Amino acid sequence: MHLKKRKAFTMLELVFVIVVIGILSAVAIPRFAVNRDDAVISKAKSTVASIRSAVATERQKLILRGDFTPITSLGLTASKGYNAPIFDGINGDASSPIFQYTLQSCKDSNARECWYTPDNVTYTFRMPIAGDVDFNLTNSRFVCEDPTSSNCKLLTQ
Image 1 (cartoon, rainbow, N blue to C red):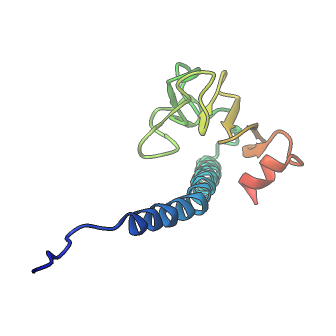
Image 2 (cartoon, helix red, strand yellow):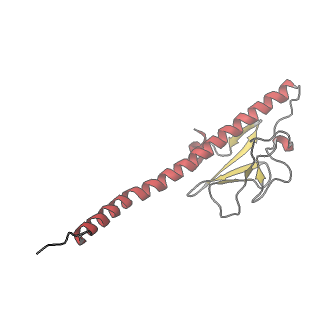
Image 3 (cartoon, rainbow, N blue to C red):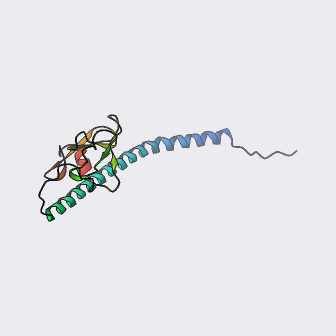
């Protein structure tokens, strides 16, 4: 009598694989969430550094031209509010944008991980989990309104 070779997994093997996958997902999924938030923070830090660099460069250009007018705005007059271009023109000048490709502000008041300005004076970054960081231009420098806050330190140090 010939015994047929089995070509399927046993129930024990299937249960073992499911348990291993469950353990791996319990460890890995929370880790991915933390890594994603870290990536968003890193992107915001890089945006702050780019803005500061662009403001300093523009300030030096103005001084070389003999213009000592302070930089007071980082956007065009029409660029404020939700779902609008942001950081699209130093002192309202479209020919001197901060970035080559303009960023869009938050889509609405519930959005996170984005920038928003109600007035082209205060620029707010909405943190991934909770809290906001408010920046403004003081003496032609892009600075936190509350430099002692933990979120400000997170984005600027």
